[in-house]
Length: 178
Length: 178
Image 1 (tube, rainbow over the protein chains, first blue to last red):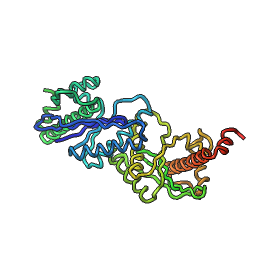
Image 2: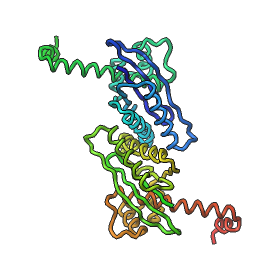
Image 3: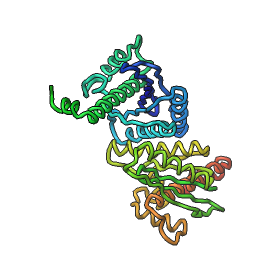
Image 4: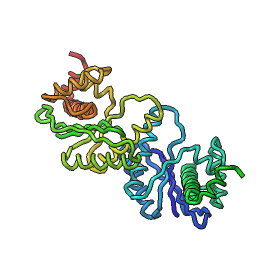
């Protein structure tokens, strides 16, 4: 299963492509889409949209996960971030695969095992989980890889939960701590 | 010259189509695009995007003006609004016409002549300026018409300013109060 994680932003949108093969995570690619501040906002949004669609076309993900934002300062920063996030969600919907939200806390829990982990801890763990020789090309790419990992983790948990629902014995073992 | 004004929102996006013919404003159409809260966000964004593009295709505007937001409460509301706004800006850019920002203060100044006007004052003035027999079908449509009017006003001001720059006599009359 191939997933693309996205860390949306007007200035820089990171993306990270991760495969899960036989319950192992494998790094495929990552990168970032940057836009120049002097361009009008609609042209910057179109650049993000077009390049994300190009990444989807090239990578053919089965699902896309979009970060539901690191907490920002105020309404204006929320508005800016929301614009980039809306574009990422639309691009994934247009590409036609399931789109998932991940919150920063879910990402940190999945990657570091600790919901209040720092960004640098997330980056180190992304490198270890994906067996990277060198760190991703940007913080945004690292964040995006973390989002993809988080989605694959929770997909596995969903799968286990479904199996346990089909198998009440397993469910009762889960419901009562061993 | 035909302009479409947009009041973006995830729940309801209003649009208003206004022509300027011989320095007179003429109402063409207005409406709103609503999305159901139970739909996933990417599908709601795609609905807004698709229907805005359909409106542009049908109405063939020469420019699109998008409201740069009435001030909202907090970061989360900024994020939500930003997502809808990003979609509106992208749709206009994809359609291929110039896209303009208008701030709420500019809209109120242009329509009511008073930057701190209330929403109901804006609606009444929109009805008068466009000679409407009955009010637009929603507050969002009325806001969107106000945005279009605001754009046409400022376009006329830009035109006058350019003329005065080509004609220094006129410019000096403007620079010094009569």
